[in-house]
Image (cartoon, rainbow, N blue to C red; front, side, top):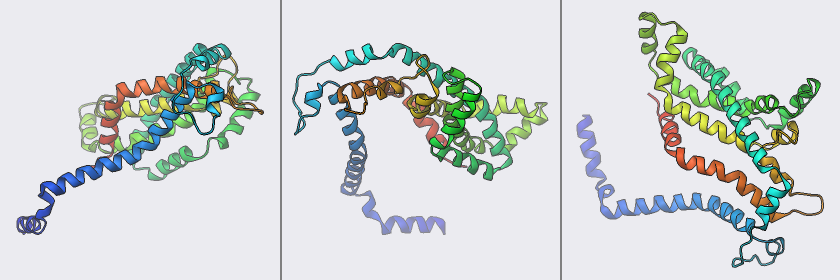
Length: 289
């Protein structure tokens, strides 16, 4: 009956295989993709263009589309801020927050997936989607009393509120896709639960671990609020450099966008090299069964 039904379905809808219909669907797909991609490209292109304009050119009405580029804004960014120190701080904080999220998040996600703790998973998701400012005041009071404001440990702990819930939530789906029979076979062969986790679960979820680590690092890199309040001049990451071009009287649009471009480029270059791992990991995690 299933075969007859499928044959009948094919006869009822022969238009789907028509070349014109396929071409129309393909064109429609790319048009929709372009409409979704165009706003992001416009914002990025506007940022790049503004970074190479003078303040007079940036405030001109109507906006200047043809102009002589200048590197003055980038010179100002590096002369006003210790950008190389900020870059090192971003790498240290982002790497530390990502590694700690992997160490704590992977076992937590494995336990939630194996014991079907759906309520705990929802609680972790709620902790992730809550606004960061709700954590900022308690963090500031606690670290101020411990005299730890401005340390790398403080920033890494604060960024865990971003990286840890994301890691746990993403990895739960990967661990749920592993058949429980593999764990039972490992236990029969003499492995304890920790060895089963390390030798069976982690190797099978490699793409998911890569995607989680990349996304955690990117979100930690781009975090601004925790970095602004909980750091000092020696530990400030790169996003804080953007804030120095905003004052009460005016906004230095050229310097602000030049600093934003400097903050964006390292992550953009990294994504270009690791996009295959991200797509593969997120795609595998979205398929159940």
